[in-house]
Image (tube, rainbow, N blue to C red; front, side, top):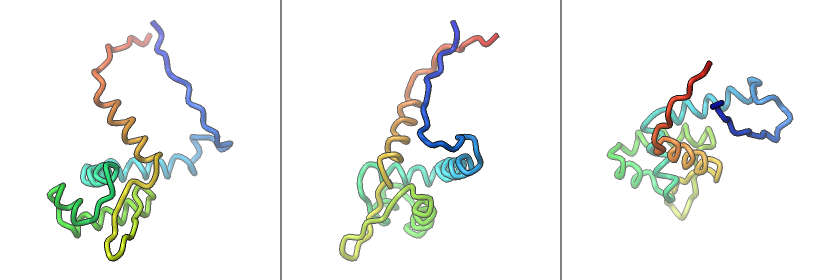
Length: 118
């Protein structure tokens, strides 16, 4: 049985393999490839959280969480929302939360049978 690959359409006119697309995407995956940063982002997908709440829930120091949040904000993975004197962090947009949701769903799937490629 031939392997079926779903078609993905990309609305941009620029080739998806051009460096101006691939390099930022690789940077995004590099940032999310760090388990600590990924745990921080996942905590921010669930709900808005302050640095102290993120640090406490993950068993990390507030300074370490702040360092990672600075990198994640620069990459537009999370955004900060000020409420009074408190700053809360949340996933930047539906693309980030959707992508992570899809990836989590993917890893939760049972492995499929191997496909013979001739």
